[in-house]
Image 1: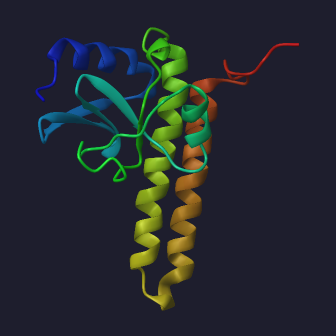
Image 2: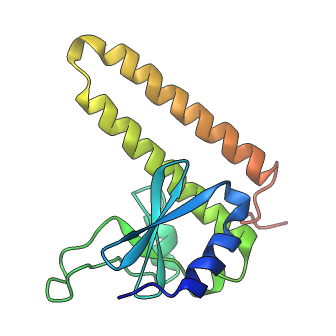
Image 3: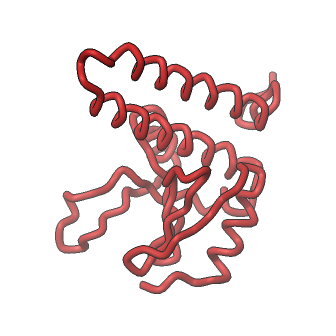
Length: 154
């Protein structure tokens, strides 16, 4: 399951508008990181983005399937879905989807930090989460501009 270097370079180029994206080899695939946040992976020459309840339906409506790392155990899946193929050629739209996955990764990291906090320091942890959410919202607003390319025009 070696990663096709040309495919990895193409995806990295398509995601340049999302900020500094780095990759790391992992289990024959490649993990994609934005500011040290693991938000995507490439396996079997397929791009997978991190999902949760906020964006899973977007992927399902487009016919995406979850990453199942064990072919013999199809009921075991990770929180990653394959990215619709038509998005690969549209860097702007791909970045819209990637930013959602980056926000999900940021939320997961801050939520994990919140769970680790002792009960006496919950208020500080909540402020950290709020700060991360505000940062994500500001960053997304700056990057997507006043109008999202996914809105329908009347």
